[in-house]
Image (tube, rainbow, N blue to C red):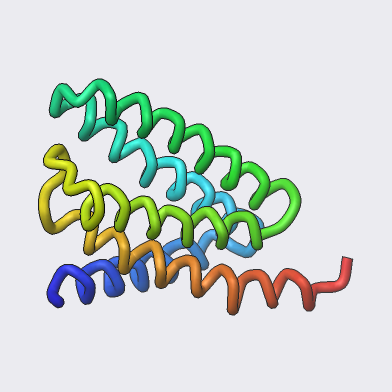
Amino acid sequence: MLPLLLGAVICGFFIVLARRFGAQREVWVYAVGLVLAAIIYLGCALRGGESRWAILALVAVALFTLSAWLGVRFSTIFLGVGWALHAGWDALMHAILSVGFVPSWYPTTCLAFDLVLAGYVFFFLARKKSATPT
């Protein structure tokens, strides 16, 4: 329970920090954060000598980077989808596959972070963007 709470609280601070950059830069902060979240798994796999997982993590980095780019370029919905999918990635890597190259507390903390941020992007940021006249 503590890792879930920790992830949600850290995400709250991340959102407050990102909002301080202004609306356009806020989206960039979330996009860069999504790419970095994926790179963390790649780094852990490489550090742990898990080359087969590193290849999978590299593919994930590419997909999350695409989602981040689409989120900045076209619609924050892509960004929300990317964060939601990253939560699924956390669940896949830890709960289903039981990989040993990440600390045991990390996937649960990251899962909570990802879900809170995906919810924020879907329910607040995307709505705010669609309500803004172009």
